[in-house]
Length: 215
Image (cartoon, rainbow, N blue to C red):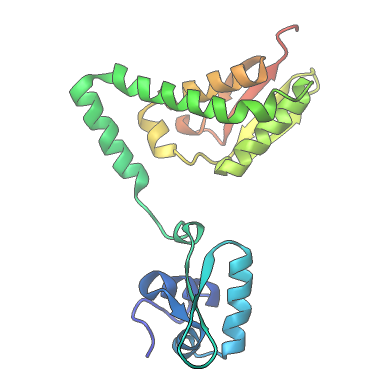
């Protein structure tokens, strides 16, 4: 019987994720029956999804016969489904603002910046040139979902472009988030950093222009 959450237009990979989300842990036989494909086809998808870190397998040992593998979503797999974190966080920040004032909200953003500095600094401080530090920071931001790129400009400055903001709803309401990112870039790069465009202002990207303090 086909699960009520599955629609025929879904790609097989997405259908498997949905079944594991709504039913997991699930065995290969059950998945094959619900999807209407062979067990070999299911195993092929599961192998690739396990390699991508989306699912985990556990062994169910039985008194007789071969052990059975059951599959469920990993934390990364669960993240493939929409979550309302931004809305919840906005409500919490607004509650904090009402109870303790904007200074308390800003203190939270400053604390987040300090934690990110502590996490990022060891990866960047080992770089000897501004160009290599910019490249490293851009890579870190890209891995964090910011769709970041960097380039060297004709005047010797550098640019970091972030085409996505994972906390866009937060930044639209509390611009302190943008200020903290700019300050963090300045401290990590040990350079002058100017934000020339911003997604929260309707820009095409968050654009940071970076210059050596010696220039």
